[in-house]
Image (cartoon, rainbow, N blue to C red; front, side, top):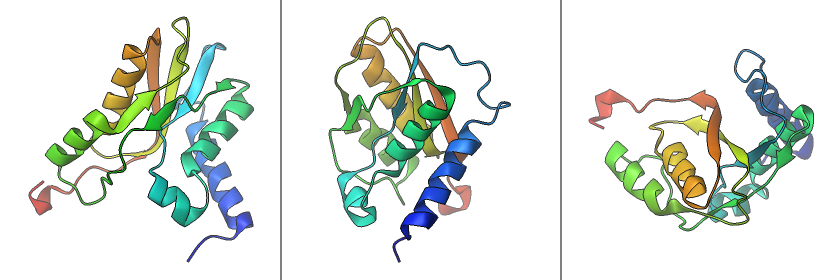
Length: 150
């Protein structure tokens, strides 16, 4: 069941507020560029929006930082239910970057980190594209269940 617009707005603001907790991300440099992990096209079509773009944009607005969706999906693979090894393989080729400035520092924002593969490979893509420095932030972590043999 899709969320109503007021429910979606509340959820996105809560995610942005959680990300903005001073204990989590204190004293960010004013020149940092906030970059969302892009959502796969299928999920954007289902929801009607890219939730991480909205969260990252709101976070950047609240913190008075620059926002740039300079990462984009090069593949459409889904990680839900995938093993650690498969997640790493998928993440290694999942991203590409455009309009990356060599003098800039970037903060990649994601909603959930499970194995860290998405953040690792998105960071590598930005660095290869010329980013001076890359930081990462997540709203929540969810480790893979060991009982599933993963």
